[in-house]
Length: 298
View 1 (cartoon, rainbow, N blue to C red):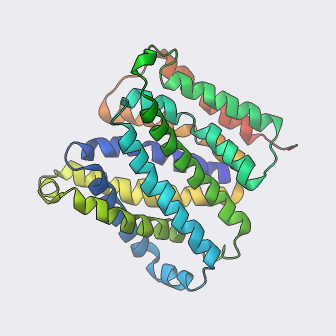
View 2: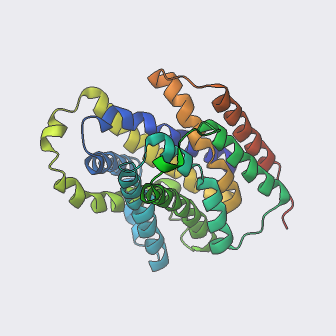
């Protein structure tokens, strides 16, 4: 069941690129992030407002610390690093760099969680990385001189933030005594609310009022989807999966994100994919099947 939650979470996460496409041409990045988190917070309050209030009284200091760290790294710094990185390298190059997310997540799992891994898990992660390389257009034809180290490091930082977010989810549910109060939706709601507060000052500095007034209906729908579905539903599924799956399983399933992004781009935006991308999708699906049969660890 945990793998099903992770699959849903990462499929929805992949749809964020489509939602962002309807917004990014009209309003600046921090404003878009803040507004999407407003919708996310309102959605969480709508479905479990009373439960969130009751749960807050039961959380330990350690739980609040992890929630704050997830908001800082998973929602705030992730977008900061990615936005700054895209000012130095192109989107295609950034996509190649973010393909390192499963490997970084596996590294954090080993360093922070000290989880053992099986041979199947190791093979699954390697297959995932190979699939991501194909999805991103391997073999690459980008000249080395076009790769700017600062841009690569910034985008790699965003991938590390996403990986840390996932690892912290697993760590929280391994250590906390607040599991009964910390339901997936409550968890997602508090992470969104803290991240919303963090995004508010930089959003104000963008002077977004005129841009917001000109935002079309499609843009508002994109913000609602990004906030209510991509953030709350995807986060909740991610947290539910983290309760049931190892960090290495989360690492491999993170490879679903670029696959779902490509599929949503084809279905919603009318873009096309080639033979390499199709082969990459098949490899990532194969990797999740390999890991799903994992039983023995060493």
